[in-house]
Amino acid sequence: MNNRNRGKNTGDDTLFSSQKQIDKLKLAVRDMQYLLSRNYAEKASSELVGNHYRLKIRQIQALRGASASENQIQNRKSKELRISDLKGNTIYLDGFNVLILLESLLSEAYIFEGTDGCFRDLSGVYGTYKRVNQTQKSIELVATFFKKSKAENLIWIFDKPISNSGRIKQIILDFAKENHLNWNVELEFSPDKFLAENAEIIVSSDAWILDNCRNWFNLVGYLINEEKLSVNLVKMF
Image (cartoon, rainbow, N blue to C red; front, side, top):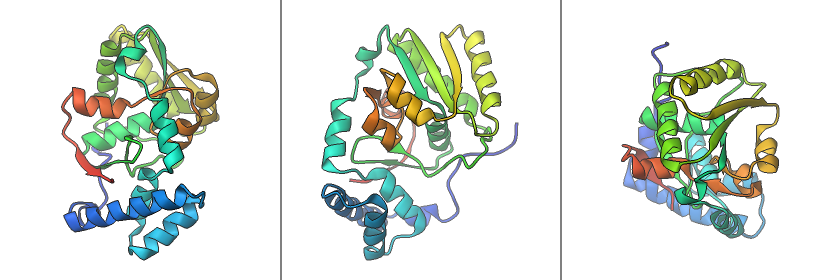
């Protein structure tokens, strides 16, 4: 195990901890929602709003993650399930999306609550997934949720092209076997498309998946409340 975290970047405290910066980001999110609701493109909108408020690159990244149009927000909310809806069902989990978000949260990186009620981080996988100190605890949190949900089974979906996806698959399968969990892990070339088209219930905070899926569950929101997780949270609206 390498001594590494999924933590925040140098400079993130300056960008996200002061009330002045948070107030500015909230105004930016409001402006983004106005533009997106009128069918302006996301990239052009975030550049326009970013320039107006003199946002830094990571602030614009957070802005994009937190923003959605009024229709998107309504659509996503209409498909959001409660924990009681999961009983006896199969859950498909967007592997890297959920795992990296939980690792970031446990590393005390900044987590952003968007207008759709979803939580997102600023970490990403760029071709390779590297296990961190918080990986084990993140998997344990998913197990805690799974037991409480009384779901029938849970299927983790990972990006096959990402290096080390096979390794994390084996780690999760070993954990499931040791803890007698009805889990499976699948590697897909296009996980977003696979989840949107094949899964009745998904766990993800990926905007495109939420727009195109049938039903979804806000796992990180649930865990924050249910497990009383300590979160470096920035509420963006």
